[in-house]
Length: 131
Image (cartoon, rainbow, N blue to C red; front, side, top):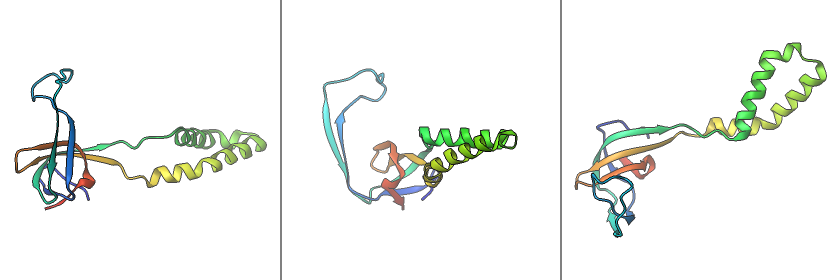
């Protein structure tokens, strides 16, 4: 589901947050020797403050597929038949990786201010449902 700024959402599952704690306003490099955990129940509602769509990561095979198809498109007509055939074979061997890349959904994270005052930032959108 695509979320947008200002949308009301709720947690779709129980969530347990654990790790080190940092006082808001402290520099990100400041670390305290304090640890803790917090549990939030599914159904806890809040408001989306920010939606971040992260670019899909291209593997080496995807970059190579793009490079070779560009080469074929630009110079394929001028290539000797054997070279063009070998290039087409290389492209064919990478086509499965290219198709898998195209089917990937972009990774989306959200910042949600929950009604209880907690803020979840950088959270995968799948953790929330429309309220």
